[in-house]
Structures are given as C-alpha cells and as structure tokens.
Image 1: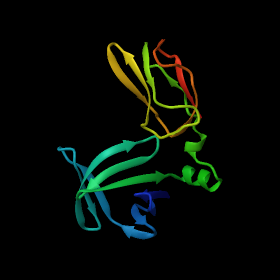
Image 2: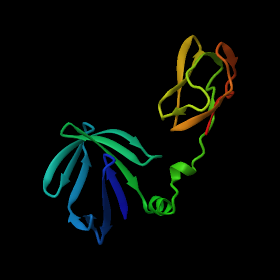
Image 3: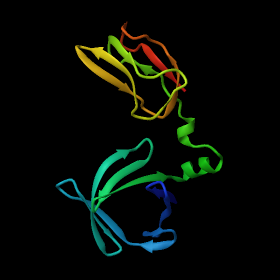
Image 4: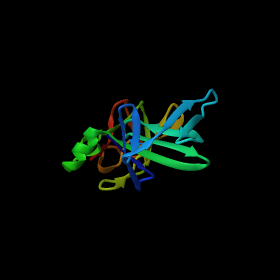
Length: 166
C-alpha cells in the first residue's frame, strides 16, 4: 500500500487489489494518458481532468502538478518508507549531506553563509567566478553549515571543499 500526501495535509492510502484501485478502502476508477502536447489527460471516477506536471523529484518522491489552475504537490511513501517512519527513522535523515565542492577552478567572490546557519534546499551559499561568469552554488538539501573552508577573493581548484554541511 502507498501513502500519498497531497499538499502536506491530506494523506490517502492507495492500493491496487485484484486489478482494482482503492483509495482509503473505497474503490476508485482512474486512468491517465500523456498527450502529444505534454499535458496529461486524467479520467477519475467518470470525470475528466487535464494536468500539467511542473516538477518531479524522484529522490524525495514528490510530484507537483496543476489541475484547473490549482497547484498540487504529492509525496509518496512506499512500504519501506512507512516501516522506517514507524521505527522513528526516514530515508532523508539517513542520507549523508555531502560537502560543497568547487565544480570548476575559479575565484570565490562572496561567501553567503556562516557556520551554524540553517539552510534550505536551493539557498545560495557561495558566489564563484569562473570563466568570467559568476556562479551561485546552491544547497542541494536542507542542512546546517558546519564550516566554511574558504575566504572571499581566494582562488580554488576543481573539487576543492568549500563548505562542509551537517
């Protein structure tokens, strides 16, 4: 059985038994087909909807889409995720946060974070100038800055550790 959470507040138990889908133990009939224009045509319990997929995050098992202009974010918990959660663990907490490394040689123009600072996925952490372009290195996950290993106006080589996270 899958646990599907919609917009962080409505959790549904979804399973397929003997070829029939059920949502919270209520039979549900649905079908989805990708259209040539990229939209998805959804038929749910006799009603037709058109969906536009905005983002898919396989690692975090989330999907964002729009139906009739309303955005919906769906998170899926498979049986292993549910088991770990019931034991007080989850896969996200077990994943090690990797240090931020220089993707190419360059010059550190600005450090945007400091040790102890809590950062969210997508937050800018450092500005690196490389090949006459400014590149903002962003957080790949929610974390806390453990240490900053470089100073502003410092040249770095590809692969150098710039920021350690925890």
